[in-house]
Length: 533
Image 1 (cartoon, rainbow, N blue to C red):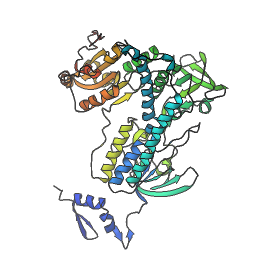
Image 2: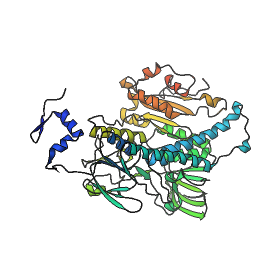
Image 3: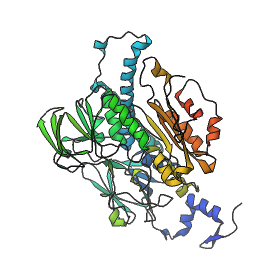
Image 4: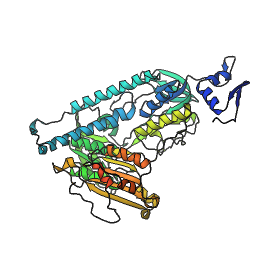
């Protein structure tokens, strides 16, 4: 029932209670009543909403706003990499992230399947089996191109205006849009949404921007990278190193400190061990200090000089065809005029602090996605947050994005799926005596015939003892880890306990069934190796 107070009157016209007032605002009849002789008492803008950034989150928000009857403009512009790489509409995920990464990961998995095939009776000619980098990249880029076009069509069908132009604030409620020819246009809007994402970070050493590539370049590289040094220990670094090694390339990973900072470290170390067992070399506790080109070509030959993080006099040199930097990403917030409108950012990271409703310190400016401070940098998070934000602004909804218990997967050769607390974070938050960790190795049936990697796949759940052993952390290393994790994430969202997990009947024979039979705790020190079904 609509609250009876307050009752709203505009220029002696009774509008009604808050529901009717909200409806009048949505239908724009409220604005008409505020006009005096055709002159609005409230400012008139070119657009209701301008979205800066055409990535997954920005596109989702813009289409949602248009469906709710709002006039929307999307500005998207890709600043080329130092090597000149650029791409179409859709942002990082579609063009230089999730999509090409997963497809190239699949390419490597197919290579492993070919190696397993003779054990299942397939007669293959080893000499006839080889991989074409050009064929793979062409197929991947063709698919990405179809997605770019699909996004353009979708914006048009939803009556969202799109401009391939760089957006920069120039004053309150006003933005400058500059296209690739340098032509400038100016637009105003009632509200703005920052969804500019991030770009890979460079080292700031001699030769890095001139000779190195990043993930922004790798997926459309017009030549096979050859012998590759991957600098970094992020999920991007390990995923790229993994599929490059899976294609048969000589791959080395240079790590400054730990693998997969922010993830469960037991799982991270198991990933590293598996990669080393399968041919990826690691240089630990070293950072590059200089990159030199000693032979031109595609690829050419680069000399990398590095020094130890523990002993600066310890110097290493190595020669590689390609150096891939994956040392982190920087938020694209420093060159969009935020200082001109007073939006605060974290000066160190460039990230934008926001309220629980994704609102910046400037009331008419909002932000979503990877630019947010303290939030997960994941495509589905940006999409979900963007849609919910728009529904609150224009649809009368009040649901906020829940950033807790968000599932994720690292697509390394041995895939890693996770949801909830890492073991380290659980101990820090609840205390070691208040958590119970159940774990086990498992052996996928598909791997038994080729006798591959027994007792490398691993399952772990972390439970909060005082809270009925509620599952607060879920971790799995193994094939199809993302598919497994997605389903369990829903259960964790609903507050599943260990007892409920145990009472669930598993599907046999699949990897996920291990989570219905976990009985050995870390505290007990019991044997967790597996020999079969």
